[in-house]
Image 1 (cartoon, rainbow, N blue to C red):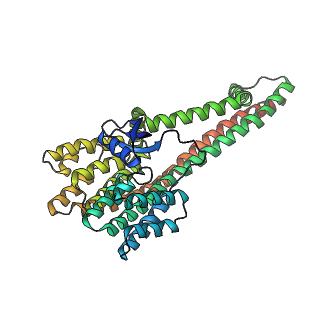
Image 2: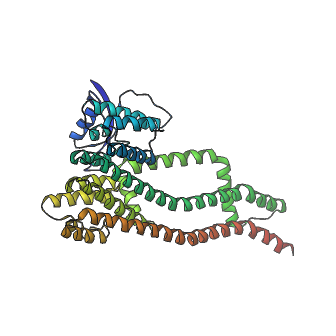
Image 3: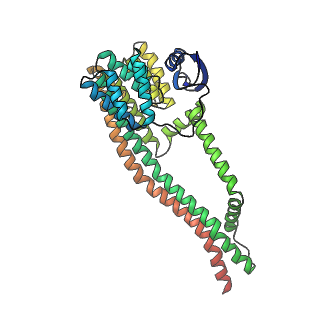
Length: 400
């Protein structure tokens, strides 16, 4: 029996756990982990060597895999033959290896969804459950097409949100580099000029010169501390409940960016829920999967509590009504869908609405953030110019 090291998430607390489990293979290990009420994230044999090369399967690779497999199955090819064909056409070597593992598992009698579930880093809960629903209903090709459509929309939305965050980050980086250049190169020349004339520098210039000396003397320590701080902050925000709780709340409440992230979460919730329900996944299972797919602990907690109420006979819309973690339109539209018996179609409309709103929000954010950055840049430039020119003007005034 083999020993596997695993990383899993506790849905009840949101904490990430690392432990070991004994099993015959990865699939059995994943089953044992799930029986403990945990969601496996990474499973590997104990003692596997560390590699500096990170094997990555991007969203484009998964979309292409889903679409090709859907096309081949729809054309009437057997599942294993379809997988082999897709595997030979896959450019990503890591994904090709995973497909080979899936083929071996399927040929041994395991379902496709269970075989994919052995690789949770590549195929998440949404993917595995949609495939399982497609297998159960005999519409695997349609399920794979829905998966590809959702992945493309998710990738498009994430790309737009990242793009909105990149511009201000680049501007702030450039400003920081200009400040360092002025402190390290220009200000010391002004100090030398004053020393030659035996004059006393203004207080602002003295303060900035002190900062410049600290940077020149301890630049290596600043880089080490900054790098370590960023690393620890990322670990704290990603792997601890308190960190994720804080960061997720900040995303929802942050000035300028808060509304954008709220619409992103609503679109993600509605699109994932619509895809799952359209594939025949039951309501409670849909809520459980969607709560993790949204990737926000506060919304996840709201959906877990709502799931308990739905079990007691309440409607989904009534359980989300008044919840501060959901925008008011979501329960209103869900209520209409429940009354008309087309909740999946209504969730699709909610998703489309918030995806369009997100586009508008990103455009508005880009328009609003430019003058804010310009004002900040003007303030920094004014401070630097003042620290350099005030001493020079003081010398000119004393010479007359």
